[in-house]
Image (cartoon, rainbow, N blue to C red; front, side, top):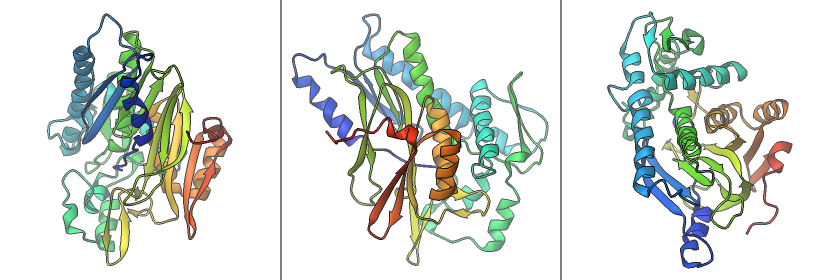
Amino acid sequence: MLKKVLPLTFLLGLLAGLSSCNSVPEPLQLTGDSMGSTYHVTISRLPATMTAEQAKAAIEHILTRMNETVSTYHENSEVSRFNRSTSTDWFSVSPEVVTITEESLKDSVLSQGAFDVTLEPLITLWGFGAHSNLMEERIPSETEIQAALAKTGYKKLEVRKNPPALRKTEPQITIDLSGIAVGFAADEVAEYFEKQGIHDYLVDMGGELRVKGHNPQQQPWRVAIEKPLLNQREAQRIVEMTDHAITTAGDYRNYFEKDGKRYSHIINPRTGRPIDHNLAAVTVIHESALVADGLDTLLMVLGAEQGYDLAVKEGWAVFFLVKTPEGFQEKYTPEFANFLVKENP
């Protein structure tokens, strides 16, 4: 369940103009590589006890740690070694892997299988995995899909907190935590900032955001929800937050086309095929980026109707963009309405 980038064109444009305003302190902005994408961090006011170099080094340390634990592109990561193992005994992992896997399994149960971290065989089969060649653009046969499905199933994966470990009940089970781990990284950076006395910041990890406090103008952070267009970037709506995470899943950035049909990178665990419905994008606001990161994907799999019903039932703040012949239809829960800016700035 690889996914998505949420551009912050409008937010970054605002911040870029602050350096020329003498009445507003210049924020610290840090950028770098992040788990196959990039990160952008803005700190409104850096404490006198910390330098920009120290802040950047701490972020890089967290991301390095994430690559060493959950990356399927890193051959010696904990997840990669777990995937290569055919043992059904407990496999020792870090507490971070346990936390991410536990949240993933909660999402699997809650969605009745619409979210499943054991999809690695299907992700690879469809050309979106760490060991895939997307340039082939080959549609798997039904036999191949069923064979891959037989190697999946979240009920075949167990997790233990103390000592931290994972266990597969069938030797062929493998996992891919990329559909939720980036949100965890955003939470980890935010937690580090809090411990250092930094309470006004925006953390953007490849499109998964955590914000706290206020921007350098002492206003709530404003973030653009992107209109899901293929070749252009335009804001659909603007949201305003002071202490939340926001993540988006969509089918319009990572895909391939074959014989005039588009195949999304988001795989339905119950069919073994890319999602194929009219839901273009889902945005979730939650206190935790880890939680939001899982919810946006499972809601994309469920589709506009089932996804909306579940979001309302659970009281989640969710914004849906549904494809129609006329464009995109907005649909959002009452909880999300509290964050929407009524008029674009």
